[in-house]
Every structure is written in structure tokens, then in C-alpha cells.
Image (cartoon, rainbow, N blue to C red; front, side, top):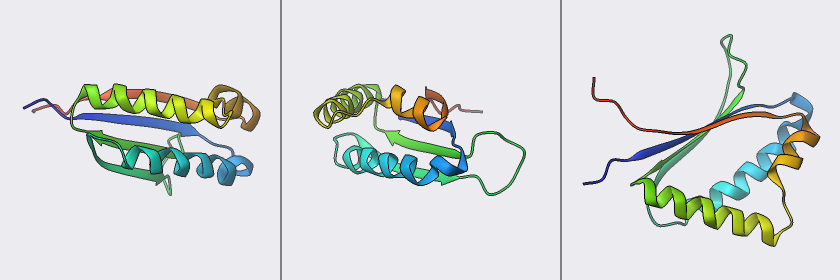
Length: 106
């Protein structure tokens, strides 16, 4: 059995940009939920603590190949609607830390 992969994206989102940012997150996650290899996702908003990242998204995938397929499908969808994530983040003042993770057996 291939190991599950966790996609964790952390964002610093100014309060004035929150609603517009979340609209895009919801569009992306609707697509992700329809793809092969998708297991579960979470869209989280910080409610306490000293951390700077106030929005975190997590998607659990069956394996690494599912993430690559998802990345390709998301890029296709973004191109089709003329959406450019980097320009969007810059315009809204959003900072991002994106990565894939594996579960450790400790």
C-alpha cells in the first residue's frame, strides 16, 4: 500500500482580503474533492494562539501520484478561468507556505 500524502498550505491573510481569498479556496477544494485519490480535506481558520498563519488548508491524498494529478487539474482550471494565484496573492497581500507532508511513525 502506498503511503498517504498530506498537502498542507498555510496562509497569512489580511482581514480585508479574507472573504475574497476564501471564495477562491472553496472553488479549488470543490475541484479537489472530485478527483481520484482524494480522501479528506480541511479548511481551517485560526481562532487563537501566537502563530502568524491564520488560514490553513489540508488535503489528504491516497498517494503522491494523486497530488500530481490534482496539481495539473487545478492549474488547468485556473488557466481556463484566467486566474493567476501569484498575482492574486500579491494583490491581496497574502503570504503562503505550501508543502507536502508524510505521516511519521513515532
